[in-house]
Image 1: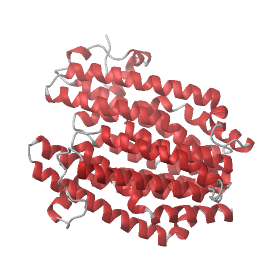
Image 2: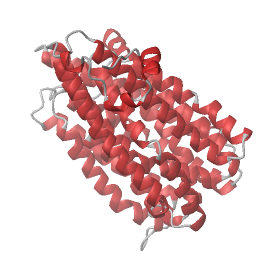
Image 3: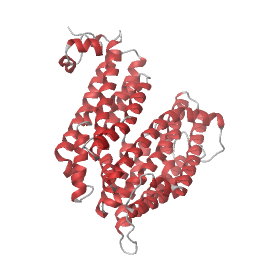
Image 4: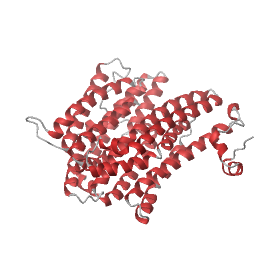
Length: 454
C-alpha cells in the first residue's frame, strides 16, 4: 500500500506544480497520462507474475525456480517496456488526436510529454516488476524505500525543470516529464544495485536473460487477467475523457486532477482490501466463517468511515481542495463541482474495494471482476445519455462515475454478505442481518435478498 501511495504522489506533485503554470499544462499531461496508465496496466502482467511466481517458489523451498521466475519476469518487463515505448513514441500524435483537442498548444504539449516518457520507457515501465520481485521475496519495505527516494528527486526536480532556474530553461509540462523519467531512472539504478549486492535470495538473478517460453506462459497466465482488467478500465477512462473533451481542455484538466485527489480514498480502501484479503484467506483455509463474517463487517465499516470523511470533504470543501492544485477561478468552480458529485459515492467506492478483498480471500475473484468491468463499461452509455440527452451536459459525465460507483459498492457488498451469511458454519450471522437491512420492508427482503428477519 505504501508503494502505491508513493506512485500516486508522483502524479499529485506533478499536477500541483503544473497547476501553477495553468490549466492547459495540466490538460496536456492529463491527456498523455491515459497512455502511461495503459502502459503501467500492461506491466501488471510481469509484476503479478513475479509476485506470485517468486513467492510460491520460495514458499516451496525452490530457490532456483524463484530466481528463474524473477529473471523471466524482469526480461519480459524490459521487452514489453521497450516495445510499448517505441509504439507510443511513433504514434504519439495519433494517440493524442483520439481526444480531439481543439487547443493546438495543449495537443502539442501532450504529444511532447508522451514522447519524452516513451523515450524513457525502459526506466518508467520496468520498475513495477522490480517491486513485484522484491515483494514476492517477502521484502515489501525495500520497494517503498527506493520509490520514496525517487519521489524526493521528483519533488526537487519538478519545480526546477517546470519553471526553470539559472541556466535551466523553463520547460513547462516537458519539465515534468523529464523529472519523472530522471526519478524513475534513479529508482531503476537502485533496484539493480540492490538485487546485485543485497542479501536477497534472488542475488544471483540476471536482469536480462533469454526467454524461457514455459515460464513466460506461466507469467502471462498469472498476470494477464489482472492486467486486462486494468487495461479495460484505462480504455473506458480514455473514452470518457474523449466525451469530456467536447467541452474543451479545461474539463480534461479538472477530471485528471480530480482523479488524483480521489485517490486519497480509493488507495486507503485498497490497503484495507489487501489486509482483509489476507485475513479472510487465512480463516477460509481454517474454515472459520464466523471470523470471516466479523472481519468483513469491521473492515468494510472502517473503509466506509474513510469514504464518509473524504465524501464530506469533497461535498463541503471541494472548491478549497481543488484550489490547491489549479488556482484558477474557472478551474476551481468546475473542479469543486466535480468533487461534489464524486463525493456522494465515496462510501460506496470504499465498500466495493474492501469487499473485493474479501472475495479474493475466499478465492472467488470473478464477482469483483464481473461487477467492476460491467458497471465501469456502463459508464460510457450512461455518460452519453446524461450528457447529451439531458440538460446536465458535462456534469452528466461525472454523474455517470458516481452512479456506477454507488451501484458497484451496493451490489458487491450484498453479494458477499449473502455468501458469508448463508454458509452453514457461520453461526454468528444466523438470524442476525445487518441493521440497515431491517429498514427494508420484509416482503422486499424476502423476495429480492432472500433474507428473513425475526
